[in-house]
Length: 452
Image 1 (cartoon, helix red, strand yellow):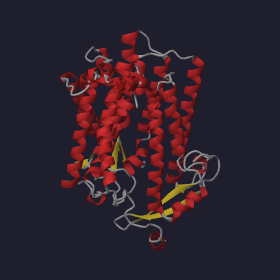
Image 2 (cartoon, rainbow, N blue to C red):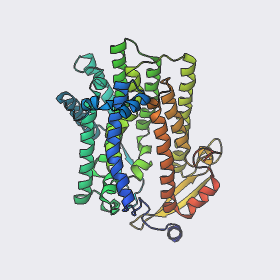
Image 3 (spheres, rainbow, N blue to C red):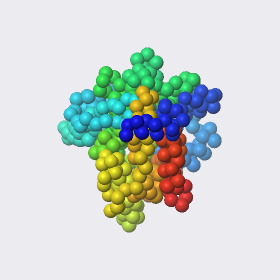
Image 4 (cartoon, one colour):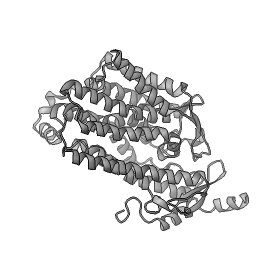
């Protein structure tokens, strides 16, 4: 049987290396990478200015910029430094590193990489999330920490996180050249700027167990999400003496998403972030700065400017968010269950329909994967993204305002997930070859049936 698999595996793939493409050395990719490295921090500062100085109004900010009045505001946001913020952020990073390294957890495995490495991980994220929130809750009760610390020191914390994000990105870039963890999984494109932005190493590690990618994404990125929300709830109460239902419901939806991430952390090891993307500025700075600062824009706005929204409206929108979560979770569970049972299960009450796809890694080994063609995956090749988008727009709609800033997260996720669809399909085509072509023939729609 193995001989037949080897024979088939030699047919479909254009290259044994099906990971990230190498041909990214053009001037366009270099300029694009440099632009994103410069523009994203600037955008983060602009979001803070819009909230704090223009009450969330993008139109007022644009008018001020056009009339030249921003020169009076910008000095208050650039080149800020606070020992208070530095100490708080350093405690946060060190505490998360100790939990990541020290807490017990299930031994889980990622997918085989293009270089042929199947890495093990200690998935203790849920324990880290619980310990973090319990510890900070206790510190707040004892009066050692102000529960509204984050919004009160937001700009200073943002600058510290921004510096740390660039520091980690630079460290990952240098490490990839001098001391790579898995040499076969490095990708050099010929563009220093693109390599810095998208990363060279696939899974850089400190020692054998401390995986930088999972730590930055899962701990500094995901755990901060709910902490920022809760701190804004405290700030809203301290400042306005009220806690609005809209902020509570936004926090609940964020909490559901984050806790689900940690409950299924071993599943996350097989997603595009861990299984495909290399570790550079895109993931390092993105999860240290971009995720905490832009994914929580709804809570930041509501913490400063409470909105009053009808209960009927909130109920409907929150219900849509829960529906999105159900689609997201059921779709992911279907794929995981079919693959873990080798197809010996039911999907929507019927035996699953699937394609057994054969592929090779750079070490010459042959592997088999299942491409599910029924259940939610019979309707869409990226069914989980549909649920993700429903949740994202519900999180924005709960704020109860038409101000574009609070809707940024929803539209950003729309662009991000469409781009991921295209990246994922290109990678799967290179990886699975003719099997992927057959899968696309069976499942016509990429994302939303009847639309795209």
